[in-house]
Image (tube, rainbow, N blue to C red):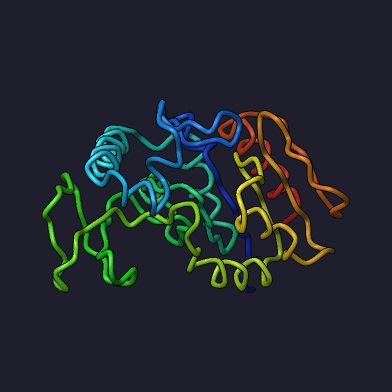
Length: 230
């Protein structure tokens, strides 16, 4: 019998337990920087050296971080379900935690891209410097979807969510669009779960179970609930 399709949308809350501080809407700061200076095309245009340095440091932070129990717990669910992770995070902790189907909405810190062509990407484990050029002769930049840029993977993600048998949200404020709109695409009748230390407002969606816990604690409870449904 085919496994049920379990789709999980994850955000900053799941990486926070691994020591990665990611931008939240509350204060408009990311590691002490104004997000519009380091996470917009105009910020990069105004001060590319600052932006490259910022992401070079984030790359070092992610390399040192380790997957936590929530990442590992989601990967373990692949034994029972056809699991797809849709993450707003730019780290690789889901992959290192063992998940085999991960879709990054907002890019990946260990990739870089040509300024001229967002589909021309290269792996990067070290630093990107001013003067580092892509094959097309333009400056290389982090493969990150910045604010004020299109989210090219959103249609792929929406198609995955539309086919879900179970939909889970972990560690996201549901305030960053278009990612936050994915919960509205899930079929109304399917079970939905939201795990967060502070459950976000979700209007009148049906069939929702709220688990107000940290990501790692919440995944333990979620796993038990899901296995009871089999």
